[in-house]
Length: 418
Image 1: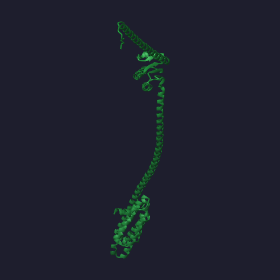
Image 2: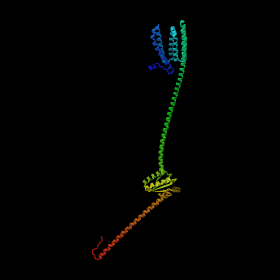
Image 3: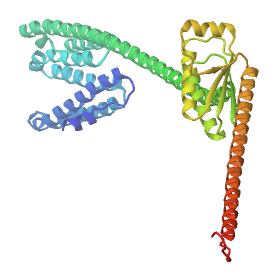
């Protein structure tokens, strides 16, 4: 029911004030229509029922017209029609006789009140002035018998005063309501402006966020590309480090069983481990029996370097190879002596040439020793053969002597030894 009434009194306008006043006018028009319809049965009791019925029907038609005008947004016209009908009804009742003249003037406050809740303050003053003027004109049209009545003389001033008070209160209320509505409208406009500004800021922020996101995406892509390049560079650097490490620890085979390892630069724990691993693999592959460690390119020899040399010597010994330390400079010799490193398990030489010469002398000595051993073995073999031949000749001589002795004793059959 309430939803139906709300839809019925809806005013089609974009202005909030017109919609508010239009809803009031449509509601008043409906009330007036209902009141007029309820007064129809009473028209038969009037002295002239036909004229009363005509007035009521005309009022209903005018209220219906005011209702549709108000819904269309024509507030001033629809309100003026409603106020006009109410004012005419009251003024007509005043002219109807002494009873109406006494009881009806107070009802002129109704049009003024309707104006106060539907019209603006200036328009309320016009309605108030029109009703006062109409009341005055009606009073002037009354017969002297009515206007001379004491009760009438008492009621009329009160009616004027009541109409004026209602008009003033209505004007004050309309002014206050108008001010409040203007403030609300200003606040609403400010809110809409703030909303628009906020929306613009939001759009700008979204645009900036989108741009920043795109920029960050580009930066991220660039960083990812840079990371990929760095990874590629790191891999290439690692490969280069491997190549450099291999070049910094070269192993040179000078003979089938001799390896020369020139050490260049500082020999830290990592290079020492790499030296041992690479050298042992090369010893296993080439079946070398001598390893010559050349420390000519090592700038500083400290405890760590000496420990690395000893570890390398021990590892190569386990692989069946001998280690010769060459390239010992005077400062290196002094450093090793001052450190108190035991290098008794190492063969040493001042230069690589000296180490190779020692190795050549050792090889020659080994060859001579092997040759002398072969000669002694051959002489011993020859001596043993001569002894065996002498024994055989002696045995043969002894056998011939026995045979001659037996022939001398007269034996005709010679006896040969078996």
